[in-house]
Length: 559
Image (cartoon, rainbow, N blue to C red; front, side, top):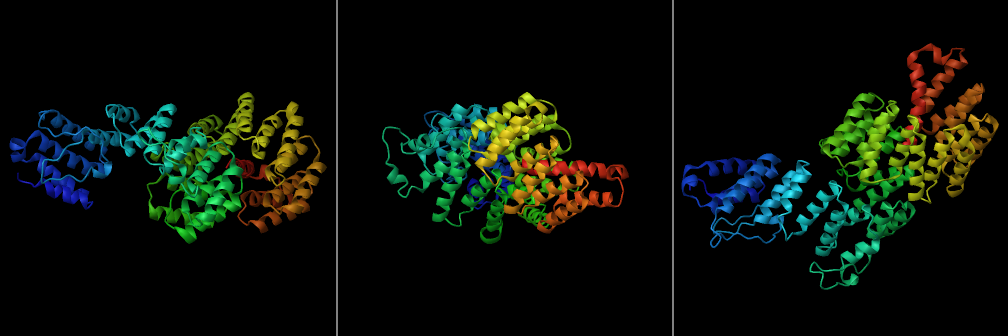
């Protein structure tokens, strides 16, 4: 043979996939190889070339090459083929022993074809390829779980995730997947106390003597069932044992962001990127969304710059870019959000920010589609909020109420879910009394929930009770010196022509956060009023700015 096959194996083992792919082309095209090589040897060579192409992300070529290898395998006489149909680990896929006639694992080749289809988002083709594989390795089972979940076959996904845990109880992505698909903590734990043969059980003490894995399962089940308070308690317990665990810190920050503990979430994300792992990308788009809500554009700009220098191809980076561009160019921001979804069609923050931008652009029907996509992947408070506000924006009050009640039933201890039902009732004059009760219930459940206090103040304003609105906001301001309370009070005073009081509250909001967009735009309008200029008639752009004030407030609520 003109080109030694073992040299390709050596290149593959050292990660030199470019050279391996080029050398593989010489090997498979050699006239000597074509004339003299056995089908078995040709198959081995093609598999090596396919592996090089797979690592180069040339998945179409890899599929074609692997299928050629299977074709040659089929030509090998059964009694002398040495073809193994047992399942082997994928870690062996590049290590071919060229010094002897090694067994070719057909199952492994089919798995590589399926993995290539999966990388191309060709779920049905991947499942079809794997159906002929009866005995599956751990990585085959995790791929099958993902494929079935992506196809909406949740029962099949659950079965494959459980099989993963029987093979190895520490497959954390299987634990998260089962929790998100509705499995209970008890059900998940029972899966990894069984052996893969299912004939014997292993004691939980043998697997998890300190019970940290059990606590992790319970925490993920709490997140999936919207029991966010319980999830935070369990994550806090785990963090005492693993204090600088990046995964636990980002998971905790994600939950804090969902329930509106934005300052705590920002501090936790900041700890990760400053003190522990400045090169992490996971959940950094969530951090970017929080910085945008805080109007902290200096830190947001630095974060996006850092993320781009780490890996500019990740979905998280495109979401971070989209929130950075929202203020400068909403159209560019929306295009980045859409690109994040093209990169990873299961990336939930991409759908959330896309929905928020579409709402601000007064395209509620399209926004509802984005939020529904996020909801189908994994429901959380933000997708519920986005759906409700989208339905209300294009007059589908019945659908909004149904969605808000669904959120309340899913999260019975959530003040924000109660407030969401109140928002729907407040949308109609006949429902305002009900809205008031829901807002008051939300405040009893979570006295520091300023979103409900501001919504209740808005309700007072709708019904002409300006004094009640001012009293309520000033009462909360005594305990919570929050910029949003100052902005709302400034808006109330400006509407009742108490311009000096309005000015002092806008200034107070800007002292707390100099980047608060609503305060800056409101102050600009107020200064025109104080000069006797009609801010609405002065310039069409100013009118759009007023609409943006409301949009910014609503966006903060949605996020």
